[in-house]
Image: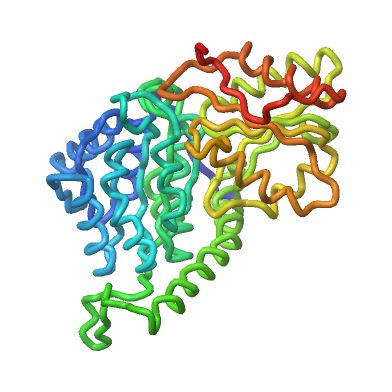
Length: 397
């Protein structure tokens, strides 16, 4: 049942929105190490700690590897735990990401998408989170600051209910440093919605002692990993459930796995993640005015991969494009393209699928680029199929 929510709109950057949401959550522990373009998140949050606006134990550590390690220890002790990072920081956490997920710890990570080196680049692409896509974490991709703000609350509720860690992402500089209106929810309502953490276990429970992270060789490793796989499958039920609860409680309309746009009668569609999705929608509107049956599908949650939901949108499509802001460096295109195309393989009726890699290292993506992609798809729908399925948009070649 929707409660009466007083509205307050603030002009915030994406980083400020993340930090504000963390303040409202008031986690027990935040362990972090600064890195561009996510530095401001923990910098602003540390001020909330110093000013006594939260009760959080803030742990400044010597590296991102140590940050995630501290988060693992605190979460295993039963604490509500968060952190933030970007790019090389996430890469340095990589080893411990697997530990957090295997131990079923609901840590929430506020992540700012930034290209992985080399060459050194501080701007946006999705190579960092795509590089960690198989670490067992839920991955939520935000289009703007307001969505990133709301997604932290949703991610925490999902993580704690499913006992799986979750990362919420936003595009570096494009969203993290761009100022937008963010509709702030009341502190008391946020905390009422989240409730108290009820840990699956705690290493501080001396009446029920357990072992965490033991050596697990050929005798039981496979069985333990199989249990983790099943837990992630079960999370697919929790994700829409929590979104429904959130929308009903706050009177919102946050999409869960996908956000469709003019897909009802679309024969041609583009799948995208993150901030470029708005640009794609503009191109859809331009082409709809010309009578073209085009649509857009924004993938909001990439992990767990929502192939069941994707089925709802592909039945009438002749051609589908997948946009990737990262390349798999395997000569077969981007990671989202490969997973979408793999899932479509066994369908009796499936669209022709193309991949457009764009925006690496923060390269701008314009409406003209989106229109170019749609023009290629329209030609393919008419039988003019390209010799290559993978194309790089906006690059000088």
